[in-house]
Each structure stands twice: as C-alpha cells, then as structure tokens.
Amino acid sequence: MWTDLLPVISYCLVMTTTPGPNNVMLASSGAQFGFRSALPQILGQNSGVAVQTYATCLGLGSLFVAYPVLHQVLRVAGALYLVFLAWKLSGSALGQARASQPLSFTQAALFQAINPKTWVKSITLATVFMPAGLSAPMGALLVTVIGLLIGLPSASMWALFGVAIRRLLTDPRKQRFFNLSMGAVLLLLAVSFLR
Image (cartoon, rainbow, N blue to C red):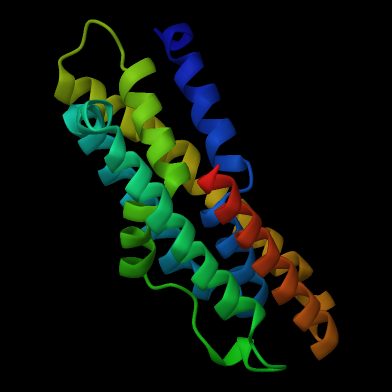
C-alpha cells in the first residue's frame, strides 16, 4: 500500500517545497514578523489547500477540463493578485514593512482560490494521483491528508527560512533589498503564470 502512495507523496513534496507564491510570502512573513506571527498564515494556507484539494478530487477539477477558459481566468486573476502583492511588498518605505501584518488565517486560506500553483497541484492530484479501488470521498480524503502531512512542515520550513535570515535584515537598506527581491520573485511568478 505505501509503495502505491509513493508517487503522490513525491508529487506533494515537490509541489510544496519548491518556490511559489505561498512559499515566497511565508519566507517574507517569517523574516518580517517571526514564526509565531506567521503561524496563522501557515495554517490558513494549508487549510485552504486541503479544502481545494478535497473539492477538486471530488469533481471540481472536471469543470476546468470541461471549460478550459475557467483555468485561464483563474491564472490571470492569480497573476494580477501576485503583481499587487509584489507592488505592495517592494513599495514598502524603509521601516514600514515591519508595521504591516502577515496574512491572516482567512486571507491565506482564501488566497488559494486564485493561486495558480495550488490549482495545478489540486487538478493534477485529482486527475493523476487518485488512488484506485477507493470511493471518490475516501480517495479524496487520503490525497488531502497526504498533502496536509507534507504541506505543514514544508510551509513551516519556508517561514523558518525567513526567520533565519531575519537577523540579516536589521539594516533598513538590507530589509529594503529583501522586500524588493521578494517582490521581484512574486512578479516573476506572476509572469510565469501568464505564459
């Protein structure tokens, strides 16, 4: 049974540990606010991904297959939101970035609705990795739980990476450079979603 799950485990590991909008925002939150303040964002992000994965595995993904324009609209909306986040993060004046707040639980959960990388992951899990021999609800639950078990430590790792580099950002110029760099990464991700 575990050998049957290795492909889905590997896929979830790759999708959750590689850079994407969620991970870039978590690294930024960890650097600016610390791990404890980023925790609601971590939990919200993973809850949103879990709900999306479960719903997609139960059939929502078939809508994107039947109506590809929906996926295109989602990609554009997600890219525009990433551009907004990049502008907001990189446009922070010196010292102002620490005065703002990380995403809340609800904001992080709702962001998944327009996060193109999360949709790609959910649709792929629903169409490629659903376990054979299980009912749709049980298969969806299994895939969702695997995603959560991998996603929570991965998200925590990205926030802790931000915390680890936090000491380097005490100088306002270095903090500004970090904010600009994170904004640039979000902008590059937005452009990649539009290709």
